[in-house]
Length: 112
Length: 112
Image (cartoon, rainbow over all chains, first blue to last red; front, side, top):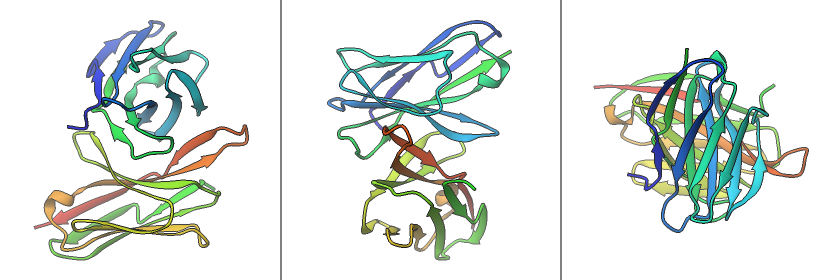
């Protein structure tokens, strides 16, 4: 158990819809990272937050947004969903920046 | 050319064999991560390196910053080591922020 909790574990929705994925980092970790893993593109870094502020941005689409709340949990919002957004979305946390990464079990999103 | 290249893509070996997985990268980095992903999808961070060598149990990771190369070694391999091993490098993007770039992974299968 990494100490990082992601919900929901599985989510099935339709094109055009909006979903929110939630991540609770390990106790005390200030950094939260979001990654997308699809079959054709492997793991892709989306975005990082550090103590509530956006720290780094990767290949995140404009339809996606994220935030980190004062209690350090983070949410990834995916809107106007397309079939190609079907993927595993991982959250990871670390104490430092950079630091050892601790991954959640992922949220599997299926867009039909 | 990908910024992070792993080899081999697939590796099958007998139990007990010494395993080496290689990672080459083309950018300046601040750190390199080795990750393990089991068939269920969960990701575990094995090592974070910025120089030299680290050892944890039967796993050894080395990095040569000048040659932009890292290796992950597994001694006395066991069927439970069967997983996908992913190399990821932390670097500064063209926009000045930090990003994590992943290799495509090495699928390791250890036969009893």
